[in-house]
Length: 631
Image (tube, rainbow, N blue to C red; front, side, top):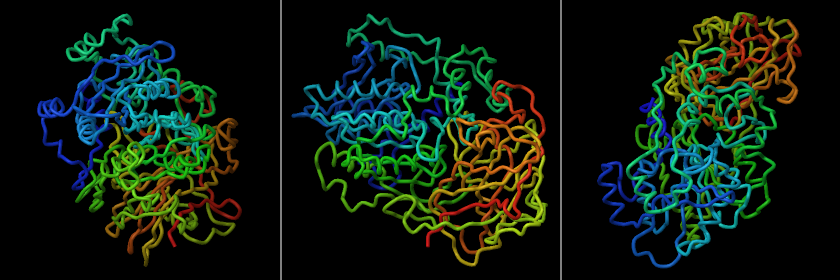
């Protein structure tokens, strides 16, 4: 398990850009020993500093400053739940480069992690611990009073709720792949990516096994001697050694709420969260950002198309721009979206392959943009991040080039509706399903399929992360699952001109079922001339939440209902000779928890029933997908 978690942490912390000039030195060529020597040469370090919070809990903090620096310094803060006392590659590179550029760099462990005191909670109490840390930094004699927050995944997600506090020292932020810090924004109510469309995602079950540690060892609270704590840090890591898990097997465990306790884990965060619904008030009590919290910090957002949370990230980008609780902050929001998985910005460069698809030359000066941004807001260098920089820079997959826009979606994106059509036999790749611009006549047949939760449709690629290897994110061929009879497949004719899609892709399904509750999963696919069916994005929705997450309602057999899944978010070109495809089914496992179709408390049940599900597309019961097409 240690190897699995180490690989996940390494992936999460991989931030450097492969583009020439992205970092002044290629630290990837350095051994850990060489980086230690380099750091000792250029920096003074204070390790094991206990920064006091308002409740007297101390957070373990390591401070790196340029040797011989004169005058107050701007500071970059990197907060983490991971073991960074012995610096690792991604973090180490940023420490070295920041110090060389005249910044103080702080790595702080969240409360309850490793050498920090207190009890851990996901996101580390950003509105209190994050706020108090900024206050402490601003008061230090070496600080110029301006702090920038930086990080990817867990090192980014805590920044969001803190940004709503508008701390006077919080001058700028760079959140990267930060969706798990988002509660409810706009059309997305994913509660930190715990859900998509009310369906729990399995990734957090794996992640929490590696991170949550209710039996953690810790130093005595009375041990506050800074030099002694620094030496203890150097000699120890307090890293738990948990039993290795075969996640490909364990992820199938039922009931879901016993997935971790069945392995002997003490009840902890997972058991609390899995009992909740998407509208549970408890989601407001943690560190998640919600759309009514305001926004107070200029932000440079980095996101990726094959991430677990691209939709909420871009929705929050729009929320931050519109908030106007701090007009300067809302007027200074910028976004970059790359065609790679979660936090994989180091893969940007020539000949990028994502999954199995060639994305071309994706080079982008990630670190040049980051330091230009921080120089602008922390050092007051207005020229470092030019005013003419586009608000949104995004990679158009399929066309394989970077594009820019003044907003998201781009202003020239107009809806194009394609209807799900068939003669009643859209089952599988070999059926008669079609995507057409014309609505179906009143007598068009219904498409039916049988969903057995004990034989779910397998996940192949798409947006995901941090799941112990049970899903590999990226663009993969979907034909192996499109061959199944419980997958409905709808496809256009080959295109005679390119169709560029950029924005939020909406689906509307008219559905019925023999079950009281079931799920409906939708996938957008680009079919190449040779037949390869590249996944672009996917979504899912639990039928009981069709009237709202706070109004669950069971289905009546045979009655037709309207389902509006959470939008798919992407930018992709469907080229000449390509075809646009939509898949509809009722499972996408192991990415999402299976619906057992009983209508009961799904995550605490063990036995499921088979559901006979149907997609309607006739008369007033039209099912369709709406694509934001650049005109």
